[in-house]
Amino acid sequence: MTTKLGPDKLSVVVFSGEFDKVHYALVMASGAQSSNRQTTLFFTMGACRALLKTGADGEHPWREMALSGQNVAENGGARDDQFKNLGVGAFEELLSACVEMGVTFMVCEMGLRAEGLSRADLREDIPFEEGGVVTFLNNASKDGSILFI
Image (cartoon, rainbow, N blue to C red; front, side):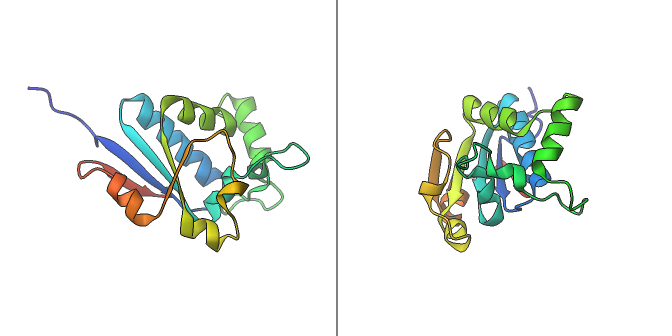
């Protein structure tokens, strides 16, 4: 008899609007999905801003996100550039990997409204399932884990 290690599904509430926390949610999701665990990322509140469309300047808005408890002169873009130089998975690489591997992306309707955003403000290269807390909880597994980041 084989004993299964770990949860059968990972469900992550991505709440924080800080770059390093959203980045690590993508790390967790890509790692879980690549180890054959269904994964759902539920973006709400400040974290919704990580998924905004590219600005008129061609830059991704997540590059301006603050870091948690870090030097205020440094932002997500600077940290992501450091990650690239260190061979650490960069934000866009992780995001693309999650999409390609079939991670479920949900965006909270309430979180969007609270941030003054709509679905039309979000990237078109990510297949979102819209819903709220009930949709997210119904998507979770009784044998899985729920993380709050």
